[in-house]
Image (cartoon, rainbow, N blue to C red; front, side, top):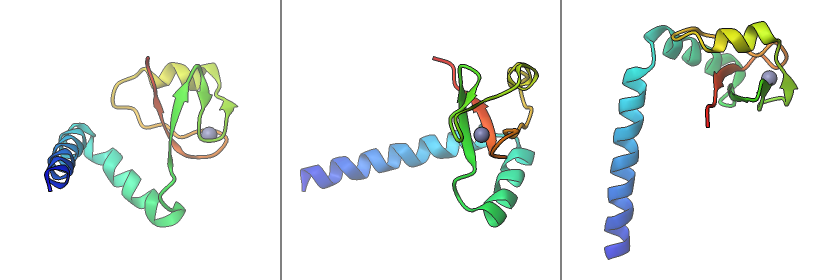
Amino acid sequence: MEESNKLKGQYREFKETKEQLEARIPPELLDKYAKMKKTRGTNIVAKVKDGVCLGCKVSLSSSTVGRLYTPGIILTCENCGKLIFLVVD
Ligand SMILES: [Zn+2]
C-alpha cells in the first residue's frame, strides 16, 4: 500500500513536470508535433549529440548543428525527417 502511494506521488510529479515542459514549448512546435504524429506515428523526435542524429545515427551538416543553437527554431533531420533537439551534457 505504501509502495502504491509512492508510485502515485511519482506519477503526479511526472505529470506536473510534463505539463511544465509543455508550457515552455512554443505552440507552433506542439502544432507541428501533433501533425507529424498523425502522419508518421509516435517515434518522430530525435536527440542530437555530438552532431549526430540519434534517431538515425547519421551526422548532420555543420550548418544544421549550428542552427540547433538558435532558440525557438524548429528543425528536422536531413536524413530521417524527425524533429531534432540538441542534447547538452
Ligand atoms: Zn535522423
